[in-house]
Length: 301
Ligand SMILES: Nc1ncnc2c1ncn2[C@@H]1O[C@H](COP(=O)(O)OP(=O)(O)OP(=O)(O)O)[C@@H](O)[C@H]1O
Image 1 (tube, protein in one colour):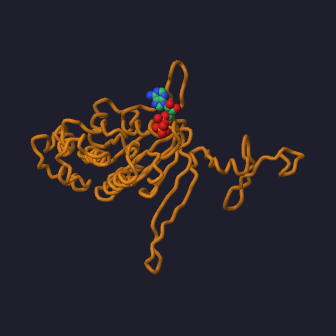
Image 2: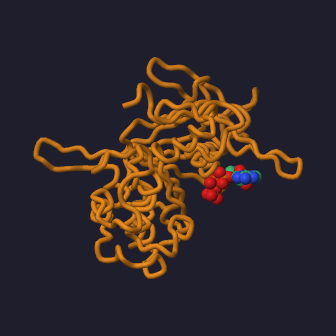
Image 3: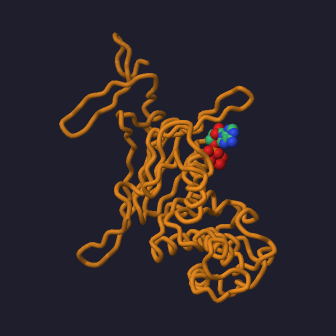
């Protein structure tokens, strides 16, 4: 186990320069994920979700701020440490199945390959690797393990991709829109597979998605808005004294280290909040009011 959060981003900034113009994909993002969590990251297109995942996978470096995974500082990794990080700590599933699987290997051989490359048992000649068999079973691929990727359905391809990503037993699995090209039934299978990987193998899972169905499969949904974490929804199951179970859903705004938070857009619109607001500190909460210009009554604006 790692001391402190397993994934920790502080004031993460990523600026891209395109034709002399700067795009701020991440604008001081803060994030903490504990080992063993199953988390979804959601947000509008362009809010910075994929940029965050690419940094956490060690494929990209932030422009500023810090990003740590399993105690390793991703901003200072040498290329050698980066290879080890990508081989042993983190696994990745992309949206396009073609990016996840080699077309000329069967599903089973695809799963065995990363183990052979890492010098573990398995590989094309040895389908008997126990870890490979365990993953084929966990991901419910028994019936199709000896087919080529082109002979698999989209859902089977993505479940094979998950098995490939965790073949070398990484502690963190990152998935960027893993259900983006799938129909509803196949999406549910893939999300259930992510749940199984988390529950049975203890792998920390982070899923970036637009899929509204995801919230039913994770404990925590983190929303990113304009390159910052803005809201979190926590879900847990409670059992009452009669044994009846109910889902409890709690919603939070994320407060950063210097006290900034984003109010939900629906709140801004409902009360026409803009430019500046008046704050009142009460004994156990803070009130936020529309700023009504002096001399005008509320409702006159
Ligand atoms: N390599 C790049 N070069 C230039 N700009 C980039 C690059 N990658 C991302 N961006 C820009 O950064 C911003 C955030 O992009 P990102 O892909 O992280 O968003 P996203 O939330 O994953 O969006 P989507 O849901 O559409 O995938 C966007 O404005 C995007 O155009």
